[in-house]
Image (cartoon, rainbow, N blue to C red; front, side):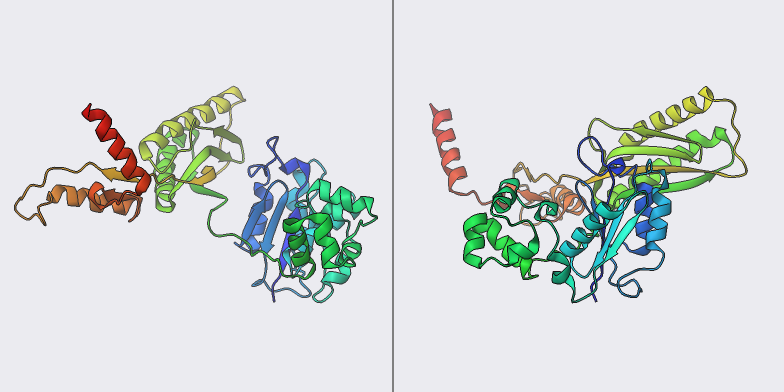
Length: 359
């Protein structure tokens, strides 16, 4: 049975840009990762969990609400809300209703299977964030304020008031047909590597090792990081934001790694003398990941030379370069210029260019 949990985050976890602050929400997200890897963050304040393979009775996963409450204890007293259901939209509405009812603690609501529409009938339309504001105001002027009142309209009336596209979307939602899967597993929330250290003097050398490890992880996944964090647990954390997202390039990452180590040591020197109690832990984390842009490239055609070992008059060195580039950037990212068929616009452009240059 499908089990969806929706976490409605408080303003503490939302950055000024209207996005989830992954760094602030990291303790809470780590708790979620202990239960499932199927996590989707929907901006600006929603986190969906697919708990279908997690054991639990009546959709309530034991311990999840308590762990989230404990993880959110540092959230300036503003706790998130949880909603459980078998449908994504119903789980979101349950979380919003729990947020409206909860005061000073993590609140949650459970919608049992088969009771979804009975639960939705009294949910205000204003809680539906993807419903256009003007459409919601139009319904309220007609005295339609809840999903139950909306469902009492005929399809023709609904389409007339909401428009064709929005009306069709509302009809699918009323019938329970519009249900998006949890889009997870495509992009990790962050990548991190850790290494124990025994002395403060080991920070620089250990950071160099961590940079090599994180470069390998970024290159293997094809990710670029817009933010790098070096953390000496549990003492100091420093952050570097490169001018542009950094891919798994060890040379570029080493420059930022050296800067992180210098900042960390400077912060430690600015405080009273500190000593690691036993064994400390140094963590390098790559955050705000995005896919490395794979720009399509074409090779300039070289004169055909018949060399020993060549094929079809092609330079064997060019063939080796093509193989390496395709392994690095993908089989369709790099092509020979002779393999590219120009469309009609490119052919006309080339013809005009040749005529212009001939004058």
